[in-house]
Amino acid sequence: MSGKILALAGGVGGAKLALGLAHLLPPAELTVAVNTADDFEHLGLSICPDLDTVMYTLAGVANPETGWGRRNETWTVMEALGQIGGETWFRLGDKDLAAHIERTRRLRAGESLSTVMRDLAARLGAKPAIVPMSDDPVRTMVMTTDRGELAFQDWFVRLRCAPAVRSVRFAGAEKAQPHRALTDLDDLRGIVVCPSNPFVSVAPILAVPGVRAALVEAKAPRVAVTPIVGGQAIKGPAAKMLAELGHDVSALGVARYYRDWVDGFVLDAQDAGLAPEIEALGMKVRVADTVMRNDDDKRRLAARVLEFVDELAVSGQHS
Ligand code: FO1
Image (tube, rainbow, N blue to C red; front, side):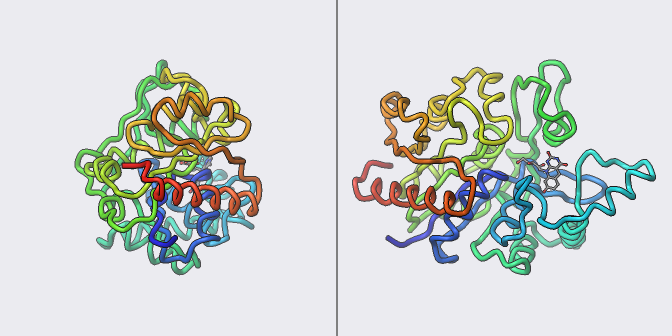
């Protein structure tokens, strides 16, 4: 089947599946809409971690060890900054800094984030469209039980996600305009929710006014891939957040969180036993190997996801 796939993604997990999809689809048939609520101003620069992670991954220049930042990175600036007493808790590599410097310059000159990212991604060789969820600033704020409210990167990187989370809000979301790729959803082949953190990667995209309604009304099937396998997050604090926010710490907990708007749920083979309970929520289930260790895994999972999307379209078991 043809038609466009719209993938919703956060950082590392989202980028991996996006790369799998990019291996299988012509560039014109894939748009990756990325969370920007992790963005922040740091050292006077506009940092967009999830957009850059997706961009570097699709361009083939991502750091394979961390998933974020660039491969073959050097750290001369961070070392020199540390020496003179500067802030080094958020590690910006020398090559990575180039993107932050150029993006900041162009944003200050009045260009939109989507225009700047389109150009940077093209220069680096990322082929599919990579779009921010909005050109307007939206910032995740994490209310913790013992440290009050923290800006996302303070909580995530500086405090290593240690403070327990009570709630999350997306400052500025109510005034943000969605990117049109998230609201013009005619003629889509399918919508894929990548295995990103439901609370701080996917939820901010849906918090941009108009996006949730557009996704719910879209004619195309909506398929989510679990970020939780065997009760644990593949990467990051998703499992910890499920527990702290009062959800079941399992793929079932994630499926329940998505039940209002997702038609199909891709469950890991380890969790196949949860399929009946997820189906009872009114979703179709597909079991697959969802842990992406290498490029073949990414391609295989992407193929399973596309197959599932097309089956849901044929059977009309969506919308
Ligand atoms: N994550 C870390 O855990 N430590 C870092 O020092 C760090 C630096 C960094 C620099 C640029 C970038 O694009 C991402 C970076 N990340 C770092 C990852 C990032 O902050 C998080 O993974 C995302 O915001 C969560 O999706």
